[in-house]
Image (cartoon, rainbow, N blue to C red):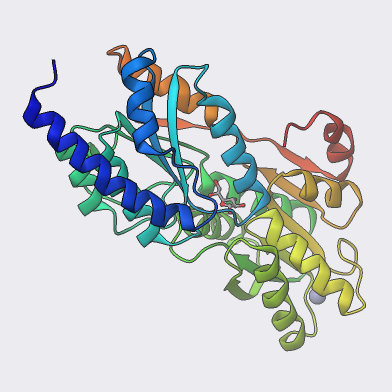
Length: 337
Ligand code: GZL
Ligand code: ZN
């Protein structure tokens, strides 16, 4: 029996969130359900588990596949009441979304932190509200690991190492100039993929990274930065792009400069989304290390385990494949994203 006092507070919180929710909805992508309808469904419907998810944005093919996996898995039929928001790659929007989920009194919060730092305050608020937090895709850099239950995602250092090792083995047999298109500044994948590539190539004297700049994980960002690299550097042999989308942007810039991507200038990337794998099969990219975006099932399983009073590992590493041009041709027909 919810006492009158708590009910009044809940209604007040609900109204506050409705206002917040409406502003968040104005972003157009927000799929946060109207708290009013959710609470009515919650009381009449079964025991749907309410989950607030704050997504980075919609910056890349990888992100679209990741969003689809979460929304297709945490459905009402599967026993979830998912509130979903797109932060358009802005940390302040993610913090606002998490605060609105806390105000709505969701049972679980999950999010992919756009950058590694600056989360302690809002995670302390979630902890004070006894709402477990699950990190998906990207990690946070905090001293207090009690602020989240687990982190599900790939090992980005390993991804960078695998690309670096392939470049060293296959291209580093002669002196090569490498330019690097970094992901979003301050994000775990950008920091770790850069580190991993350097770890794997630092002992090969043939490999020189002559330029490195962020393209923010977008095609347009990759294209613009690659145009600058081409103007400033007459001899570029390899492009290392932290994701397929920036690699696809680099292809446009290289072709516009009258050069053949994958031949005159080799390209290696990370993700393995459909468009990247297609460019790889077409010979415009030379190697891709996969970063599996299909995290919905793992997230659903973890929430259900917690909900049933179980415990989960603090770190769940997603398994990633890797493809050269021949392997991409064989794999393309069966790819799920
Ligand atoms: C990696 C993910 C990265 C992808 C990019 O897990 O965070 O963000 O590699 C996406 O495509 O934008
Ligand atoms: Zn050269």
